[in-house]
Image 1 (cartoon, one colour):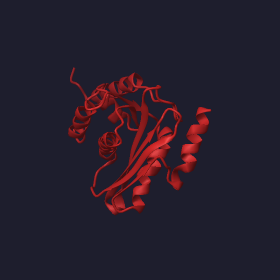
Image 2 (spheres, one colour):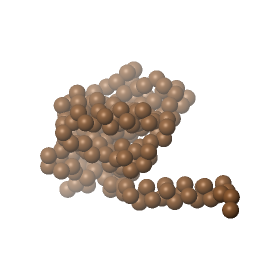
Image 3 (cartoon, one colour):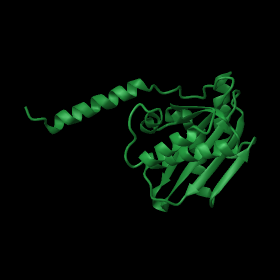
Image 4 (cartoon, one colour):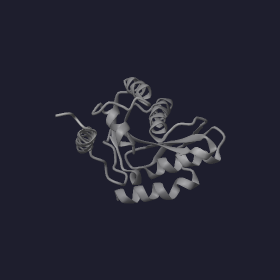
Length: 192
């Protein structure tokens, strides 16, 4: 029997379903990292009409306190999965600059996180960035990649959207920007 298009489609969907089951999402709110690690959340935003993208990176400690945050604007016509991959890449650079050596890095792109966890191959459009990020992750003592649903990544998303109002990048160290206060407070209250 000749393999039809629908057969390929069903085979693909089964494969995607299996990958999704293999990598469960974390809760929609902040879950604290282990005692010896930090939590880094990354996200990207595409502003198609302005022809640029934004990246947000947020580093928190065990108690949910902000250690560092960054918003970055990048002039490039990339799609969503590409900007998410660039956010991971930039998150690793920011962690290195902040001298964070042990952390969990979370993002809300399941395809990207599965590729970083080496559960599935990355899409060809982000393969080089994913492999570069995996190589960079060896510069740290402990790095784990996790998928978190978009509601659990809200502070990082707000940072990515903030790039709309800046020229290049903004960094906050041990202080939170006013537009992020409520989202951070909601996450920390969830821990109590």
